[in-house]
Image (cartoon, rainbow, N blue to C red; front, side, top):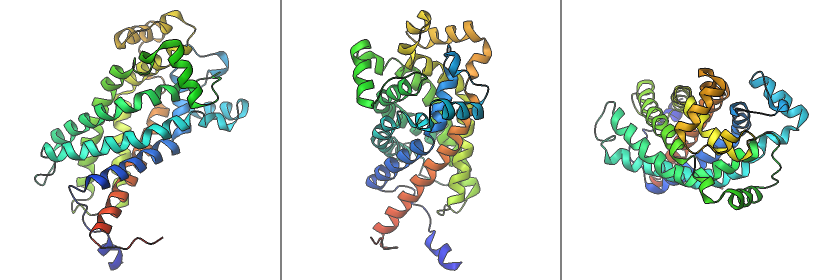
Length: 307
């Protein structure tokens, strides 16, 4: 028991940029790849005018019907787009976060620094979403029911040919409107729960799982209305409704959602969104903190890495 406690030394408050980039890239790939089927179900359930075959009564029903009628592989359609984008985007994401957190004073003293971590989270998501947004558009186009795209390259090429470069960024302002408050809330909540559950600041896997899960679930639930609008904008090219197909921005998306579904329309896909973000955020933070700890420990010659 004493050896384990010795190995779990305190996490460095400001690890190297290389450690942050590598840890962030691996965390992003792991998070998105593992939880991708749940994300596919969420996208299906957020579509405003789905085909009759894509109307589901709940998350379990969606999984069952998609698997039985379209095949289990359908739940993974488009995952390559996420894997391609998540690595570099999350490397940029966590690298920016750690740099800005230190710059804004988040590592300066003991105690909680919600404004510093929240501002750092906002900077991180602005940078990473600029890189990730096109991959996210391709992912969602491949996730919708009836998608005929056979590869990420085919989907990206078709979207570009039919709708132009703007199609990959039409949802970017909406994405930022959603992800900035999401990430500000998520980062500040994670840092708060991490320090409450682990005041000594030692590397503790359980702390990162619990703190990450709680932060992700609360942030996901609070920003679901914005995510519904983002999904509408990113999948408008596949829509048959002319109002949806010609939607140009966030306010118009809100108006269409309200006109067609009322207030409940803003919470379409709430359950799969929370079910997706709670474990995915827990996975992301756990992998990130572990890789960062592993690299930092190796750099200090505390533990050997053997092949």
